[in-house]
Image (cartoon, rainbow, N blue to C red; front, side):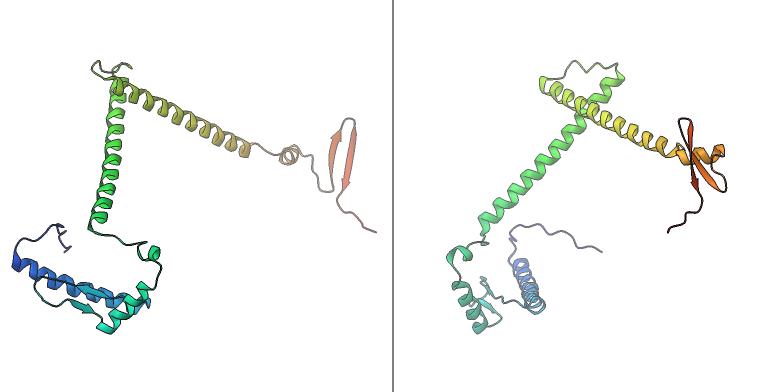
Length: 205
C-alpha cells in the first residue's frame, strides 16, 4: 500500500505537531547518519523546537564544532553559494509551478486549435464564424505546421521508395550472368567492336 501524500502545511494541533516533529526528527537524523557513513562526508544538525528548551545537536558537540569550523574557513562566496532560506525555497517552487502551468496551457491550447482545424475540414474547410483574430492566427499557424510535416513525410517516403527500387534493380554483373555472358573459363567485356578476354587463371612471374 502506497503512502498518502502529506500536505505541506502547518499542523495546528499541538499533539499531532509534536508527534510529527518527533517522527520526522528521527528520520532526519537517521538519513544524516546514512549519508555520512555511505558517502564519507561530514555533516551536522542543530534542531530547535518549542517543546524542548535545549536544541538537539547531532552527532555531538565536538562533531558539530568541527563541521562548523570547516564551514567558516571557506570564503564567504563559497559559504553562500548553495544557501537557501524559506523565502527563496517558496519562490523557486512558485516559479516551477508557473512554468508547469504555462506548459499545460500551451498543450491545451494546441489541442483546442487542432480540434478546430479538424472541425473546419469536416465542414468543408470553413472555420466557425465565432472565432477571434487570435484563434484564426493560431489556426493558420497550426495548418502551416501540418503542411510542413506532410511535406517532410512525403520526402522521406520518396527517399525510402528510391532506396527500395535501387536494391531491387539487378547489377550489371547479375544481368550478364542471366544472359550467359559469363562462362566457365572466361568473361568478356564488349567495348565497341572489340572484346576483352579475361583469362580465368593468371600466372605471375
